[in-house]
Image (spheres, rainbow over the protein chains, first blue to last red):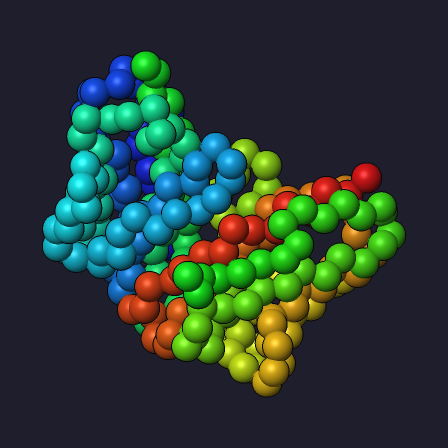
Length: 110
Length: 115
């Protein structure tokens, strides 16, 4: 089955720093989503981005489907950005079930 | 805000008891997905349902687990004779179509603890 790899696994930042999280996938996909799981365990939709670039405030994402990767950019990080960031994909030609990566654990310190 | 709703948010069961987890999809959505997150791990797909039909249950354990999405009412994930290894967060998601290009929206999860 499709493999989804996220890097780095852990990231520590000072407040105000920028960061880039990466998601590689091993096969073609029809759907790619980025999520933030906050320290209380809630899963928050960040982007639905099977291809192209989107921006939402301090966050932006780019997916290059032909090269099988997606990037999530966080600018001017804040302590509330802490948590785990998951990338999830739906392989082409199958049902709409998301395959999740292992996540990037982000800690932003004041 | 008619988001995905799950209840209960926390559930404690003794070994051997039954657990029933409920999920109401977003308004207008008729496709429901259940995922399980074991401690310190990512989410794993369990089952995909439409109203009154199970479409894909490839991620469901073969025994003790079942799911339904009746014509009326919420989707139910049922775990019979729970064991400690069932302790996890169970998330429900919904979408407004079953095609694999549609965004899924997640509920807050139910945290099951088996003692």
